[in-house]
Length: 81
Image (spheres, rainbow, N blue to C red):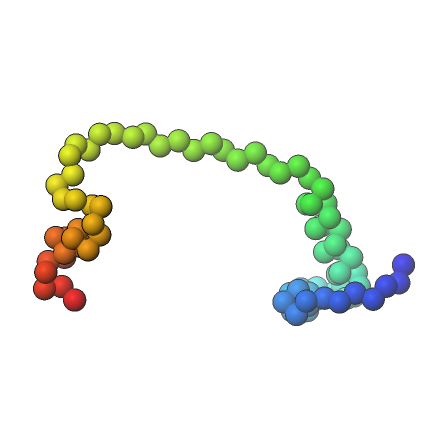
């Protein structure tokens, strides 16, 4: 099938880079990229591993962390700039 295709500049640059490293014709490279992309798009998304963190009681905070300026002043000192 013959068709006109407008390719974004960043995609064209990647295709040119790939073409320099291989012996494929431009049309063969575009077709292979489309095949791989379509195959990936048709696959079901992989399940992500559920990550869990354990919480622990740190006790009462030594400084009030609700006021960021006050917390930074306490940690860095009033003369810090």
